[in-house]
Length: 116
Image (cartoon, rainbow, N blue to C red; front, side, top):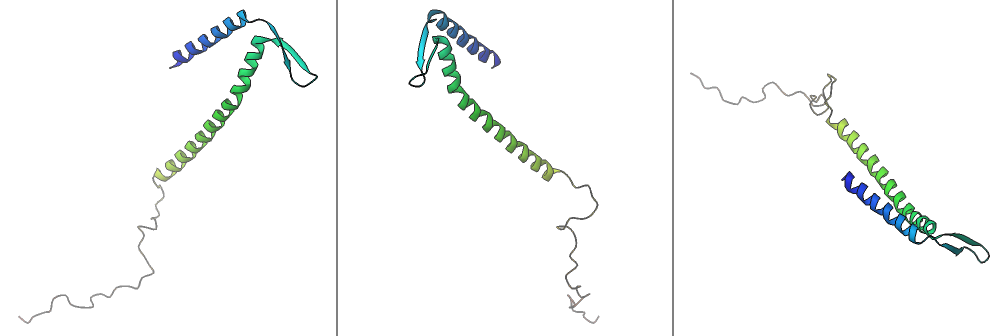
């Protein structure tokens, strides 16, 4: 995948160089009514491209940062929940209940005794 990305960037650079070579002409850009900027056409194209790319790149980076934080938080919670308990004290689910009254020893004989 890295080679494809490199090839695409090299092709874009080559296209920009070819465009710059064939269109090296001065252009006037009127910013306000009395302010005029005179620059070369390739510089204007590159600056316009970067101004259009910057907001989308910032949105991408912030969403990637936010998702990485969410994944790290979820992994930390999962690791914490999956870690075995090392202390010897019983957990509340397995501890015997002491608030119940004691059961009687044998309140009713389950089998009646018959004389033999």
